[in-house]
View 1 (cartoon, one colour):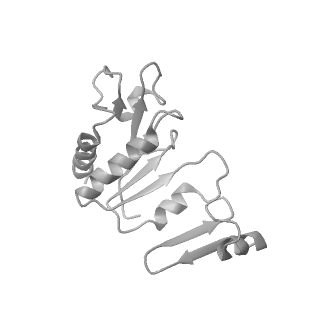
View 2 (tube, rainbow, N blue to C red):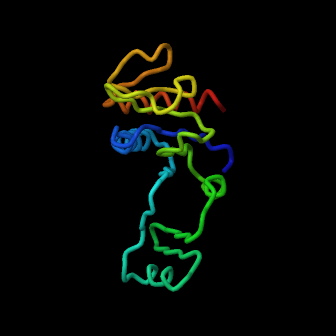
Length: 161
């Protein structure tokens, strides 16, 4: 993993984590940042499509199925994978963002909406993205201010080197 900085975007379901991440990814990419994103899914998800060769391999019992083309690759593991094992496989990026992992050890950027509480204790937040100002000293960003958040993450990454 080569000490790649990791930042977790954390929030309650339905508060805009994915929307924020999409905007943030675009902002970071526009600044030349190479990045990986890992989404925590509390439910069973299906990445493969029924009937495709890779789906058939997995259905037949393959523990690991890989699909590789000239422009991308996917590895489907039909077994538990520890997040740290996955992180060790990620190389050649400047930043790793996670969606979720509220209890993970990485700096957290919490998304808080009007009328809701923070998803993690304020003291564990590196920053808060909110429509409810007043975090008490923690850097805050508006829900639509992905550009400023990207600059903050880049500055934080540089400061931690």
